[in-house]
Length: 536
Image 1 (spheres, one colour):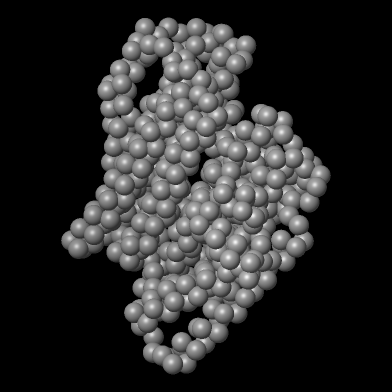
Image 2 (spheres, one colour):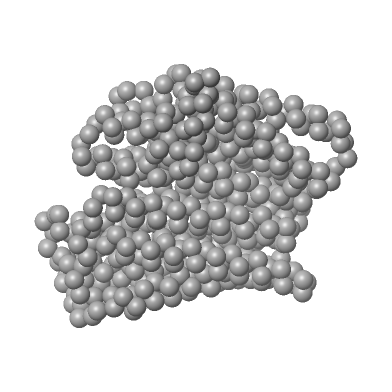
C-alpha cells in the first residue's frame, strides 16, 4: 500500500494541534483522577499508589511520547533524506527493537519486584509492581502504530487511542478502588485495583489503534516484511538514541517522583517516624503531584501550540520571526506559571481542605506549588531547544536536576521532613531553569524577556496575591468556623478573585499584542478587551 503524500504546512500544523489537544486532555485526566482517589483511599492509600506510579509513568511516556515521535520522524523524513530504507523497514525494525526493550523491562520489573519493593523499604508493594510490569508488554505495538500514523500525519488514531486509554484507566481506578474500599480490602489490595487500570487502559488504546489499521486496510503495509541487517542497525541506532532524548524531557516530573518513591519514605523513617505515620505523611506530600501536573498543563498548553510554529520558522530560516515566537512561548509560560504558582500559594489552605478532606501539610504543599513556575519554564525551554535541533543539552540538564533532587533530599528531609522534600524539589527545578536559560543564551544573544514585560508579570502577581490575602483575612474573620464546605467556598471565590485581578492587570498593561494573542488558544477573545481598555 502506498504511503500518503507529503502534507502542506497548514495540515502539519493542524495535525500538531490535534495531537497537542489530546496530550493536554491526557495530562489533565492523569492528574485530576488522583484527587478523588485520595478521597477514596486516604493518605496511606494514596501513598501506596504513588510509590509505584512512576514505573507506569515511564511505560506511558515511552508509548506516547518518546518512541512514536522518533518513528514518525523517520517515516516523515525518509524521502527528503538520503536514507535507502522504506516504511516497512522502519516498522519492522522498530517493532523488533521495542519488543526487546519491552520484554526486558517486563522481566526486570516482574522478577525484580521484591527487590525494588525492598529498596523502597515496603515489601508489600511488590504485588503492585508485578501488575504494572505487564504495561511494558503493550508498549511496543502501541508505539509502532502511533509512530506510523503520526509519520503520515494522520493524528486521529493516535489522539483517540491516547484519550480512550486514559479514560478507561481512570474509570477502572475509581470504580475498583471504591468497591475494594467498600469491601474493606487492605490499602495494598486497593492499590492493586488502581494499577490494574494501566492494563485495561493500555489494552483499550491498542484495540483502537488496531481498529484503525484494519478498517483502513493499513494491515497490508505490515505484510511481506523482510529483515535487512545493515538497515536494521541504522534504524535501531536512531530509534534508541533519539527516543531516549525525546523521552527524558517528557519524564522530568516522573523522574522526580522516582526519587521520592525510592527514598523519601525511608528517610522519614530514619527521622524517628513510625511506619504508619511515615506512610501517611508521604501520602500527604504526594498531594502536591496532581497540583503540580494540573498547574503545569495550564501553562504548557499555551506554549505547546507555539512549538510547531517555531519549528516551521527554523525550516524557513526566518530568524526574526523565530526569535519573536520563542520569546512569546517563554513569556506565556512565565505568565501562566507565575499566576498558577503564586495563586496556589495564597489559597493553599482552603484548596487543600477542599480537595483532600483536611488541611494537613498546607505549608509543604505551598512550597511545592512554587515548582509550577519553574517546571513551566523548563518544559517551554526544553521544547524550544529541541525545536532548534539540540537534543543533548536537555538530557544532560535533566540528569543534573534529578541528581540535585536526590542530594538535596538527603540534606533537607532529615531536618525538615516533607517540607524538606518539597524544598529540595523546588531548588532542583531552579537549578534546571538556570541551566536551560544558559543554554538558550548561547544560541540566542538577545534578552529572552524584556524588563518591562517582567515588571508587568511581577506587578500583576503582587496585585493578585494581595487581593486574595485580603479576601482570606475578611472571610476567616466573618466565618471563623472550619468546615470543608466553607473551605470550598473560600477557595473558589479566592481563586476567582485572583484570576480576575491577574488577567485584568496583565491585559491592561499590554503584555501581549493582538497578533500574539491570535497565536494563543482562546487569546483572540481578549482582543476586544485590550482595544476597549486602550481606547479608554
